[in-house]
Image 1: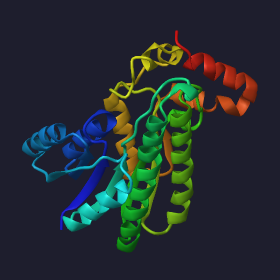
Image 2: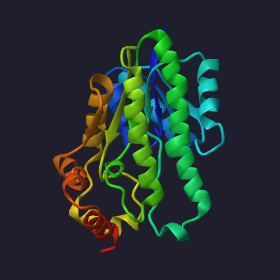
Image 3: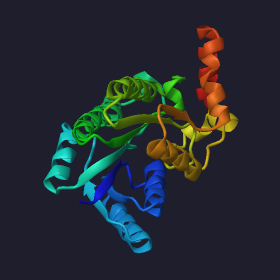
Length: 258
């Protein structure tokens, strides 16, 4: 039976690059996103170049019960998933009280609800099998919540806390749960407003290929969490030695428009 790695948010950014690098390593892929055109092109490209099995499923993870619907289709199609990368997610920039409530709710649905549901459903299968690996994509903002990214920061803080606690529960089962914590990455994730912040000037985006490689090293062989890049590691530790009021002033200045 063919084993698959399922990647959400596989049509662009980190998810797309992870798919390419996993294909190069010979892994069969199950790609999930909303854009059939992008997934179909990627499927053809990877199958032709690497001679692996590549399938895709169209799902909108903002929808209610999205995780269950995706899991049910995987089971119906009898795909054997032994690896899961919860990469799908999005953020937004702006004053919290001015941002649309619907956008906030969709962000929570994708970044938290879908991730928790998929982790629960596929981890349960993996525990029964006695093997499996799951990577949840968190963020530098998991450690360093920024003003003007209020809901996004909160969702990524949740992802890290959730991953670390469930990982501890899974010890000894053969299932490994890890968290990737990238900082700025050169992907379509960044809106034009985000690119105008001081933080983007101080901490230039890293190439997506570098971040994806670090994530796959963690996913395939690692444990725990990984912050990508020395500068991001350094910044993530500032709250340990900086008083809260001063730290928040620094973060607000970094998150402000230049």
